[in-house]
Length: 75
Image 1 (cartoon, rainbow, N blue to C red):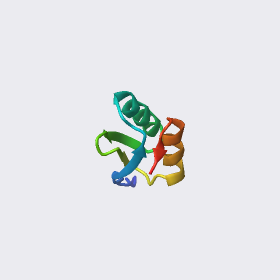
Image 2 (cartoon, rainbow, N blue to C red):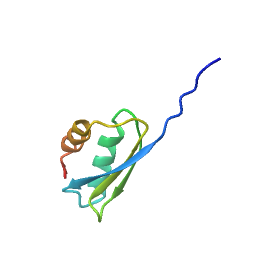
Image 3 (cartoon, rainbow, N blue to C red):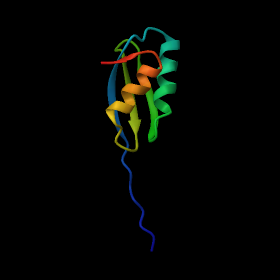
Image 4 (tube, one colour):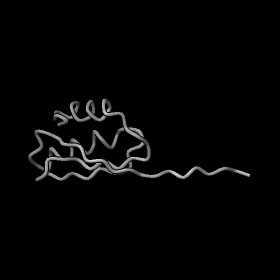
């Protein structure tokens, strides 16, 4: 018998300072999507936040590094 583990996707909103256009959204989306376990990223440009859905718990340091590598700041 094979055990199947159920995974729950969690969505967390992260504030991102410096986003102002579609190019910004694309850069942050690409950076966050590259993190292991991330299944979806939705950018709320007026709210200056990224909604990240992941199948695993994300380390805040990894999220911060990804956002900073894209040229923005986690707030």
